[in-house]
Image 1 (cartoon, rainbow, N blue to C red):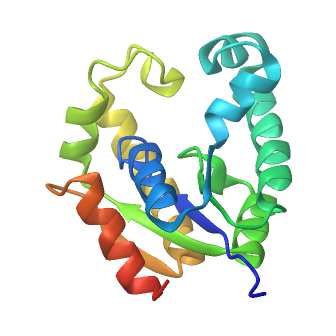
Image 2 (image 1 turned 180 degrees about the vertical axis):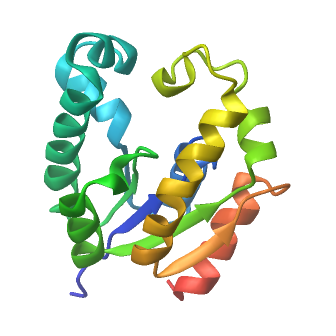
Length: 172
């Protein structure tokens, strides 16, 4: 029997990782996981609470552990948190254990998709969301590109269309 492969979705907040991940998993008959949802499930608290209590550093440690755990499975689609790639360990695990798909989007789309979302701690500051997103892009986009096996733009396309493009590009 052929080994089931993993697909790991990386990209900034608002790129559509969770929505596209669910669509992709359904299409390929794979299990879907979202690292943020898994952290919430394991801690019994939402991400914002973990950030408030443990800071970003504590959250990133939890995220590293969850992604290490989930990426060892076979036959999954995993939507990772936008900042997970900051960790060299996470980048190594994702690169070694599956196919990494970078879901690329513009800052304008990120602003539009996240403007009413109160569940994103990094955007709950006095800074303008666009300024925060631009700063994160400078830091993280090179890391997404570094580990990506495939890059797919998500702007102005439905989750179904993007999932189909990923399947075509991966020859699944």
